[in-house]
Amino acid sequence: MAVVLDGIAYGLQLALLAVGLTMIYGLGGVLNLAHGQFAVVTAISAALLMGNGMPTLPAVILGVLAGAVLALVIDGSIMRPVYRLHGENRVLLSLLITIGVAFVIDGLLIYNYPFTALNLGVSGPAINLLGVPMRRGSLAASLLALVALAALIVFLRYTRRGKAVRSIIEDEEGAMLCGINPSRVRTAVFALSGGLAGIAAVAEGMTSSLSATDGLNLTILALIVTVVGGLGSVAGALLAGLLLGIVYSLATFYIGAYVTFIILLVTAMVTILVRPSGLMGRGA
Amino acid sequence: MLTVEGLNAGYGDSVVVHDVSLQVADGEAVAVIGSNGAGKTTLLRAICGLLPARSGVVTYGDHALLGRPAYGIARLGVAYVPAERRLFPRMSALENLELGAYPARPDEQRLARVFELFPRLADRRRQHAGTMSGGEQQMLAVGRALMARPSLLILDEPTTGLAPILAEEAYTSLKVLRGEGTTVLVAEQQVPLALDLADRAYVIEDGRIQMDGPAAELQDNPDVRRAYLGIV
Image (cartoon, rainbow over all chains, first blue to last red; front, side, top):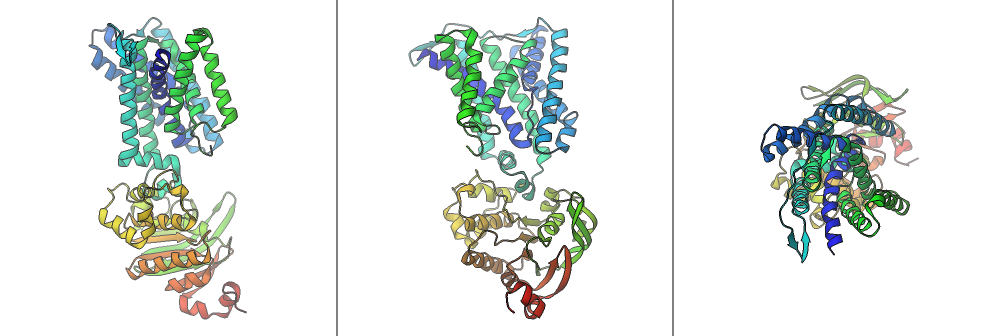
């Protein structure tokens, strides 16, 4: 039971990390391999601000904003040629450009801030949840992820702009015929996805620590969740995040931390073999 | 209000629509009739900004349409209902309708009017568009277009994929809209239905306008009768 709760807690974080990635893919056929780097930029910004004496809350909020602004800048500059292409060409160029962006961000951050890490160290006595003692950091991170995901779902389901986002994922031409400007919505969602990656980084900082070298790992985790859930499906990312979180937690408990990454990859492969378009993907 | 002059459009190296000119006046219903592959869809897509035109002039009121993005043309009050409907399959019928009014807030009166015109949509408002029947999807596509209170409604083959009786029903509802003064431009290969609805019609073949005139006259034209009405 404790293991499963831990898994759910971690799964919420995974889902939060992946929703931004899956939304961008659904909207524009762009696979952003710099997604983890947005999280890292948030983490390093927040850590630096806190190191300069800023209280935690404003530092973290500014950090998340930094992630969103970075996403906005990248979407408005180097991603422009990507949007001029269509179909497979767009996916391929987006892979090349975003992996380049990831290397540049990694290089700059690792060179300049090799020892900076975001460690929010939420501590204190464990809290009992359903009779299971849970670490405070883990609970706080789950709560943050839960609130962020709930806010995202409310936005997508009940607001006009959120419905516009979904309509583009469903049928871009249909959305245009309704007077929706897909490229503006895409830019806004790119920024949103940077911010969500940032919030995921903050959640991660509550349970462990996040440093400049973690970008690639986060991107890979987000990709696994996205692929298992079905590229472009927000609901799929939520489901896959929880599933993989539980798998991760069980694997760590029963086998050992050193193989969990492999087990996550195997889970992803099995899912793709059984359902090539993911749990909630189109045509599944 | 809609004027097309010397429009050329196509895909890649091939020009599909050659030097097409046509007019749709305020309150008029105009049909573009022709067989499959005559260039009707290409013509409409170029007018609506979904396909860049090679040359020509398209004006709507005071606005030049060519070069404008499709969403910009939609916001000018030109609603286009494509043959493939382009609905949002995993969203409810109600959400599809609401998005038709974007960026404005969906207007309750307008919604009530759409439900009055298509009572089946009211019954199925919670159902996902993708799970609806062909006839219902057609109603939903027209209903979505109407939500923006368009001043010009453009339809591409509204009978696509519909059984004959449903095709007739689709045209019955278009006639109701006509009666209310909605300006309509419709492309159709089911020529009798289109000529019955329209005031005027253009006959398009191989991407060129071959003939045009009042619908009643075309109905009696021996060439049109032979080619499209199946009457020898």
